[in-house]
Length: 233
Image (cartoon, rainbow, N blue to C red; front, side, top):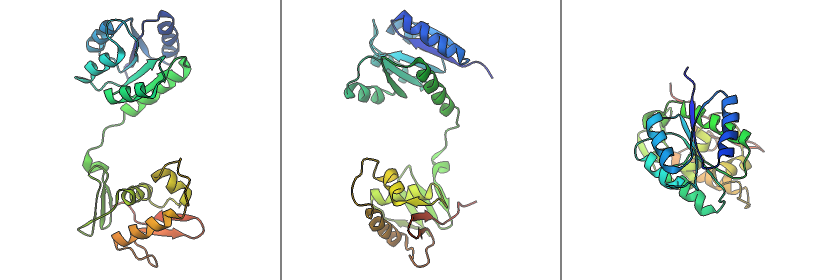
């Protein structure tokens, strides 16, 4: 396997030198650029596997460099900046960055993030057909957010759909109510955990699932719920 190459675009020589040391120690080949125009040119010419891109650059700022890169490439990009305002993070991700690191930062941590992003990028992208969850008599399509049960369309609320995907994404796994809340409502939910029971009832009703002899959603007494169906072969 060829050595993966990382382009570091930053106008501070000390940062480029520090990142070079850590990234080369991790086995990467490192390219450098000191400003926006040269960084953009290097990205186009050298076709690196990942780019570490400072936001505050002379010539062209990092956001503009990223926008131009995204016009023709989906190379992973980590934005690097001293600014910490939420709006900058939003702009960065809207423009197409894969991660966002604020200065001062740990070069070791950035190197680990780079490796993690590259590892994810190596996983072959699934087609919509492959992403669909298929079980005997039930098809759940996360892309179109549709559910088909025994050939009929199952009408679900957005929240009930997310609950079904959380359960069906791990068949046989026992979820506590709190675990389902974390997956579906979010970790900042502080209401009554019995809200899960209410939505399980509406989900079962929509699926035509009998709670006394469930086909899809089973109750684990005193703990929570699990998805019973096995993935279709």
